[in-house]
Each structure stands twice: as structure tokens, then as C-alpha cells.
Image 1 (cartoon, helix red, strand yellow):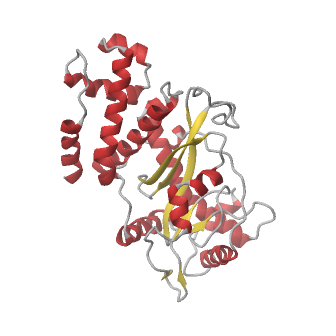
Image 2: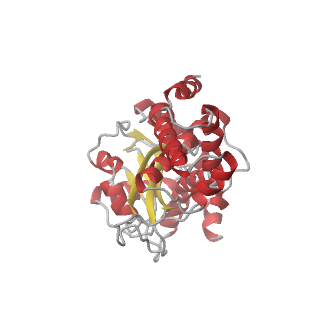
Image 3: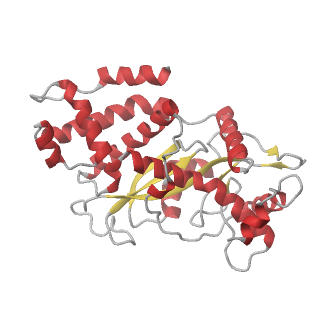
Length: 326
């Protein structure tokens, strides 16, 4: 109900756009632009709106959406909400004490003027990075947008507000708690791929060279939890097709577009729930993987999770068969 009231309030907060078209046309125009990815030129003929007016509509509507909805649809979790997120990960992904999955994706753009090669990524196109933290319901709990396409996940994470807050222990995570059937308290942690630095509150896969069965099982269990962020990106990309092609706007406006579709993604998911038609097949391209060494304490936590997944209390009946079929 609160989210619905906020969206209703958005209609009155939308800045006035000086245009000859009727105000009501702003919404179908804006929705079509995000949902189809049509160019401003093609939409000009459909709505008879000039390019400069169209750019104003997109910029102002995106900013208004973010200002109104982000505190409702993407607010920072408190301890109780982190616990609720961990409960869903444990039930759906069989990974206890997990509070989020991390990943970064390239958003295609037209080369910004005077940017040199900073936005030119290793896949040979221009982009900026969308870094996110996803819960097990495929909603984003945190986003960071705009890092150079040439940056790695590790660099984006290290310079993000989220990464710095995690390092300073300012995310209001719950206190360490015991895993089911054990007596040793374990920290709550996020899961990511090989690009991220191992730490007390950040788990990543073991290196793929000469792994023991225990470590292979850990990688399998972590992958099951981490793939929720890939699915979240797939849902986002499938619903908002503006992300299928290079965004032909000024950099700051392109960033505003991505912020808007992310907050709308959360708003729609919490209103409508998960649809079977949402597919991993529509995932966008991942950023490059650059392995990083982690802290000694992080490695200790890593190993304790791995041992737990092989214990009678933490094992899954099918996990050995799953790793043997890889």
C-alpha cells in the first residue's frame, strides 16, 4: 500500500515539462522508451515530440521516479531485514547466513565526448558498470552505477559506497549466529564470483585448480546462491529493453535511466511477484573476472562454511552427484 501511494504521489511530483503535448502523454512515452528501447527519432514520429523535449521528459521523469521510489523500493536493510533476507537464501538456495549476491554488468552506451578509452571495455564496446547486490527474491538491495567500462568488478566494488561500508562494518549486519546443528557462531556474508576479495563477510569460490571434494561442494553451494543475481539481471534486461542496445543519451542521463529501471524493477517485483517467464537466458554480459587474494580471517570463515556443507547437519543429499555431473 505504501509503495502504491508513493507512486501515486510521483504523478504530482513530476516536474513540469514545457511542451505542446498533453501531460498525460508523458507516461506512455516514457514507458515505451524504457520498455522497447526505441530511438528518440522513432518515438518522435509516434508521439510528435521533438528530440530536446523527449530528452527532458526522460531525464526529469527518471529523476522524479528515483527520488520518490528509492526510499521505498530500495531502502537500506536493517538487522531484522538482513535476517529475513538470510532466511530466504537458506530456504531457496540452501546457503545459510547469506545476505546477498554481488555482481557487475556492463551497460552499453555511445562513447561520451572527451572520455578517451575509459569507457571502452575488454569486449570492445563502450559501457559503464552497474554493480548490484541482490536478495534471493531477485530484488536489488543496493546499486552503484557509472564506473568506467574498463574497470574490473574488484575495482568497482572497492570504490563503491557499499564496498567501503562493508569494509568499515557499517552495513548494520546481524551479529554472528550459529549454523543449524552447530555451536560455533558464523558471520553473515555476501557471495560473489572470483573477482571479489575474500573477507569475513564476503565469500567467493575456491580456485578451480586441483580442488578437494569439500571445496568443490562449497563452490557448487555458493554458485546456487550467487546465481540469483544473474537471474535478477536477466529479469531486469528482459523487462526493460532499453538495456538491449547502446543508450544514446548524455552520460548523466543514461545513468539516470538505469537508476530508474532498477528502482522500477524492485517496485514491480514486490507488487507482482516472480513470473515463470522471467528467464536467465536474458542475462547481460558480466564484467571481467580478476582474482584477488583475501584476508586470512576471511579464509578461515571460507573453510568453516566448506566443512559445514560436508557435515551431516549441512550437507544436501544430491550435492555429490551434482559436482560429479559437472
